[in-house]
Image (cartoon, rainbow, N blue to C red; front, side, top):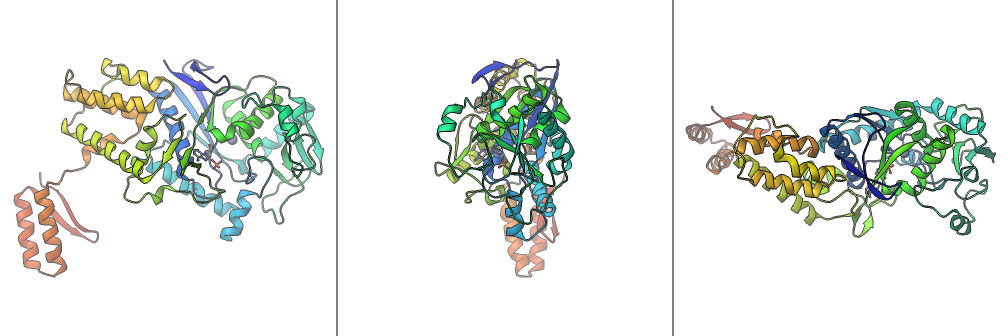
Length: 459
Ligand code: AMP
Ligand code: ZN
């Protein structure tokens, strides 16, 4: 059984998909105007755990993620500069070059973090037609208005507006700031299509029934999610910042157009904090994966798994050191049990408590603790414990297989290798050859390559 926290109801609910055995998930993807910082990556790790967990419990999952390459302004509402235009100015490149570069960088980070690639990755700029169709549908239902050349969603025509974020519309009206887009009738109204570009030389523009322009940010997710997952699906995810604006607006557009409930479960991951503040790209001062020198990217994955996705995570180098040490200790424990090719089914009783932990709203810290207990549980044969580790890794994604492929080089051999390296640096070839023979006597072969000495077991 899987239970999940649903932001819509603010409770942990039993998860049942619309279609038996199948789960459809949409996750808001990156805005590809910069690297994704480790806060963004925390959210993608959470989504990866969700998908892996559902697969582990035998659901057939379709996971869709968009790539935002147009329309996202610096604020999630209609304020601030266009993020892609900002990057074009900064890097003096074309919009598509920027998008391509950062999309590639994003998937490289995902690979390093062992985040599985979504089944469908869709770019906003490839789906302008679908967005226009959806806006036309909203228009035909009287849910839009034209003002100052832009098409707006009329929040007053959608009584349920704000239900996800529990917004108080009266407060919103009272607290509205004057300088907000004066074309809007109500502060929460939002742009579906811009024709009056707020920015000069807007590179990306398309023809539309309302004139040449470009889409607002929110419409892309509604249009692509409906295209790939249908008019009703199971789970929609993102970071908690998406609750009050982006996901609220997605619900208004989608439910406004289809006339019924759109998504059953809305799930959001909490932020990573740096010096007690939210890490954010727009504000600068953010950390990317390659900044974590001296760590394996999976140390970062381990850090994220060590706290629940709905808790804030305070980032620090000490916390990274802690995660690295815990990951190494789990690996040493596993290696001390030898090797195993035993396949253990997720239904085996050895995994009962692990399953209960991960099935209870993805409690990864508890699941990691249970895994440690399994490895130490002397009631079971080491082979079985290792088989359980491999099964658990289907969910955790720690690449445990590689733990057993890494050869352990004894310290005596390490010392000889160091001596041999200095002999070679001094061009003392006779000494180098003598040390090679010594190493061989200990059962290791050393080879010299451009990258330095390479050593492996001789048998
Ligand atoms: P963006 O590229 O800004 O659209 O964000 C990509 C994803 O990362 C979204 O799901 C955001 O909600 C999420 N996100 C943004 N900042 C953070 C943060 N500091 N910690 C965790 N997730 C974040
Ligand atoms: Zn989205």
